[in-house]
Length: 93
Image 1 (cartoon, rainbow, N blue to C red):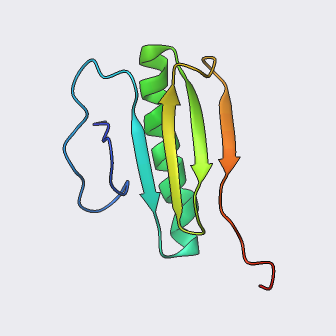
Image 2 (spheres, rainbow, N blue to C red):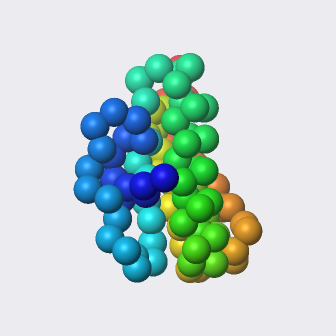
């Protein structure tokens, strides 16, 4: 599997991460709720493979209803995933 620094996990992908990079980031953007689990699972699996190589943990962040990032981090112990929810929901919805 090729690990990508940015862009959706599916569709047109940007340049691969250069060899030796220590942090790998996936940006997951989805417009359909049905694709969200599949897209996030693909991003997490790719991040797990990179995290194992560098002995890093993962950070999963929800930025909005349809935008997530999954990244490896040397600040998170290997084998651990930290989740952040930064989505500011409208309380009237």
